[in-house]
Length: 324
Image 1 (cartoon, rainbow, N blue to C red):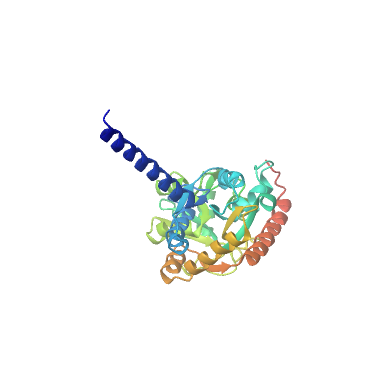
Image 2: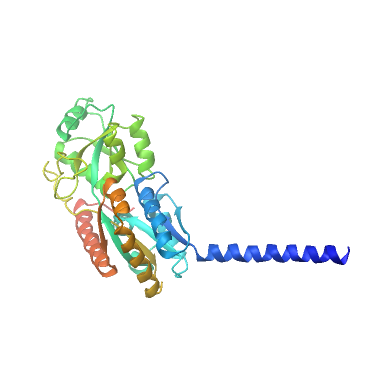
């Protein structure tokens, strides 16, 4: 090989090596947001809305990585093993952090030991919805319809086993004297798909999960959690108003990081999140999804999460549920 060809080959190899280092550096600087539910669901949509803006604020690539399954348990286990370097965050709601460790014997993580709260950004309500083929326009209509099914069990879909929606199914059944059975799904997206296909008559999930199809007239939300009516579904009563008490405390959304992540890094991420939530277009999108948007500092969010966890500890114990 001539000296000229060797020189050209050397330059080419050096360029390729340099390019690889650049790409590695870029990838190394990127931030990953773990989501414990499938793409297409409410939590995924929220994560992608925030990720686009966080990228601008932090000046690095922010990618959403879906680790769906077991009510967020898989994503939580991934977070536990992630390096505490400020490059992996977990966007989740109450189920994975506050409920799942109380209903699963060995979830594979301990939120108090393995994670650190970063910031909260919203609250939401779970709602009861019926499919388009179900004639009910209210909970009393639904109860009457179920009773006409020759006293057969009626399945109500829920996004995850041993979740708040599943406990709500039991309480609704007792209140209306119905033989209801919770049918667990792997997230809200497949549940909604079955409801749209009239494969299941009813479901309980978050308002963000249902709102688009409710507004399109494909599903009907007929009851909501919380202490007050929801502006996106005006006139729909709360469960408390219907006599199903105990679901007044509403769930949260927030970010968590691996334990040991430097506080300065957590503060930087939280500050970027606060700026993003202040953007009118972001707030408008999140509110349209059914969220009550409110930034909570690390201390505020920690206090909220602990209070919610303790409230559900009392409910779960009173129900007699045994960890599986």
